[in-house]
Every structure is written in C-alpha cells, then in structure tokens.
Amino acid sequence: MAIPDFQSLMLPVLRVAAQGEARINDVVETLASQFALTPEERAHLLPSGKQTTFANRVQWAKSYLGKAGLVELTRRAHFQITDRGRKLLVRPPERIDIKFLSQFPEFTWGRNTAESNGSPADTSPRTASETTNLTPDEIIRQAHQQLEAALAAELLQRIRASSPAFFESTVVRLLSAMGYGGFSAADISKALVGGTNDGGIDGVIDQDPLGLDRIYVQAKRYGEGKNVGAPAIRDFFGSLDRFKATKGLFVTTSTFSTQARETAEHLSKRIVLIDGDHLSRLLIRHGVACRVEETLTIKKLDEEFFE
Image 1: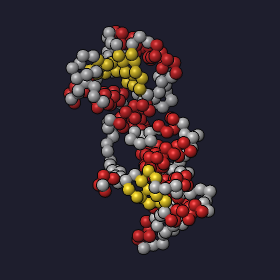
Image 2: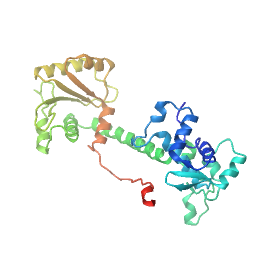
Image 3: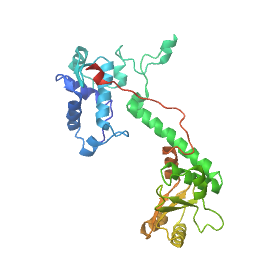
Image 4: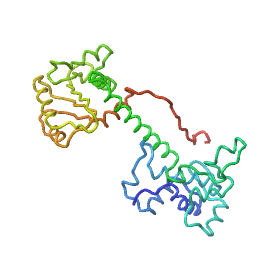
C-alpha cells in the first residue's frame, strides 16, 4: 500500500496515545506495522534525506492533534492523550482530519488572517493541507518543484531563442560551475573552439584543474520537437576519434531519439548525453543563467534547549 497521508494518521496516532505516554519513534514503528508498510515504504526518505516520509507524517499528525488539545507533550520526544482526547475516543469518528479538528477553538492553524485585520474570518481553517493531504513541509517542497519547473521551461525558451555561440558559451560556463577545468573568465573563452573548422567540436574542457584529461563538447541548439538522431552521435564519435579523445559530452536543448541513446551506449568511447530537461536542471542546481531571488528559512523546535 502507499504511505498514508498525515490526516489518515491522526486517529491511529490518537489511539496509540490512549495506551499511555508514547515515544514518537515507537509510535512510528507501531503504525508502520499496523499499516503493513513494506521495508521500502518504511525507508523512503524526504528530499532532505534527514527523515523518513512516514515518520514525518506521523509527527505532523501528532502536531495537529496537539493544536486541537487532543494530545500534549510530556517530555522530549514523548506525548500523551488529554482528557479531551479520551472523551473523543469514547465515541470516535470514522476519521480525524483538519476539517474535524476545526471544531475545537484552540485549533487555529490556517485561519483566515483577515481576522487580525478586524474583518470577519472564516471559522474553519481552509489550508492547502486540508484539500491535498500534504503536510505543510510537503506543500513547500511541491511549490518549490513547481517554481523550478517553470524556471526550467523559461530557461530553455530563452536559450533556444539565443544564438548558437551563446548556447555553447552557456554550456562551458555550466561545466565551469560544476568544477571542471578551474576556469577564469579568460579560460572560458579559450575553451570555446567552435567555428567553421572546428572538426565537429564546440568546446574542449579540462576534466581537472591540472588538465590531465580533457572532455570534448558538442552543443546543438535545437527547437522543441527536433530530436538528435543516431547519425549525429556517430558523427560526434568520428570527431572524437580525429582528436584521439576518449570522452565526449553531447548537449542539446531538445532531446535524443531512442536510437541515438542506444548508439551512444554501444560506442567504444564514453559519450554522455544531456538533453534539454537535464540541462535546465543542471543550470538551476549550479546557479548558471539564474539567481537566488529569495531564501526561506524553516526552523524547528530545539529540544536540547529545554533539557
């Protein structure tokens, strides 16, 4: 089964808490067994790599129950059910979710901020979590992915509208940002060798700062829908052979046909293919052709402070 969303975990968390003071890590293990999660589902990590997805959702379920006064913290990493929580379990609902929790006056997460401005507020919190079953941090990550996807599309659009020389320069600058060659601004211009007699090579990049090995680059600025085929890969292989090169990087703003990828796999020289989607992700990751507009810092409770 899929990993349960955090709202589906609210009632199970409350029931575990009803058995006595609970340690959050023990609750995670208990519910993982109760939901018969597979080892892969138990081990699935958040994008940060610091916590499992299931543990994160259990903790958010506990936090929402706490905001509604159904559980309370006792000591570090421990919590227990409250009298309100016990009364609720005498005749439990089929499901506890954000909409259900909105009946409790203490539960204010997501309330309309208009209330603080003196205007009438919606008495039931309508958060994104209520409708999508995502935890608040999952919502942030999803929004971040959507922003990056939009940026990636815009980057490709601008690069496709630029000149071939600009595209070749962008590729070399990306490789520099990734740590290849140890370029200065002057070195980047020297690495661009494209021209009428370039022999099918647009750039030559030192693989390391000492120049012990080199990577030969070809950059094809194609529009969307114009795929790079197997003949272009074989031509690039021939160019590498003329330069006695062992490594090549073929970058395009479009994509590669299945035959092109198969050809690159079976050739005797190592040729790495970077299509438009992969290129845009690399540009964003390494801060090339884009900049940081705003940084959001997410903080969490420091348990050691209270010890």
